[in-house]
Length: 117
Image 1: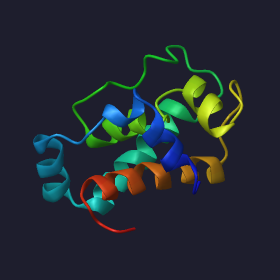
Image 2: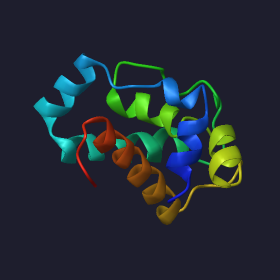
Image 3: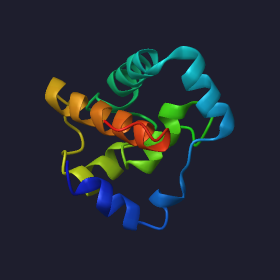
């Protein structure tokens, strides 16, 4: 995972994502542990299944800090996950793969908040 943030930062598309003032206020109100729980839930339900009917369209671009982070970290759909992280499409993500994705999302969020992981 060490080189992934640098590679993502080089992507014109991925690097344009930033937390909004509203996102930051939401994180401050809910706390990072709640945001982590949201990420765990979103990944388990929207990303981890082997067969996703609306793959490529299941993650909104805004309205939750985890959604923004998913686009920034290329964990928004199985196609991006396959391209950037090497996890095969059409197979259930195991617990370690899901944890990797959640950890990457939370690292990005902490970097946006300027909190050192």
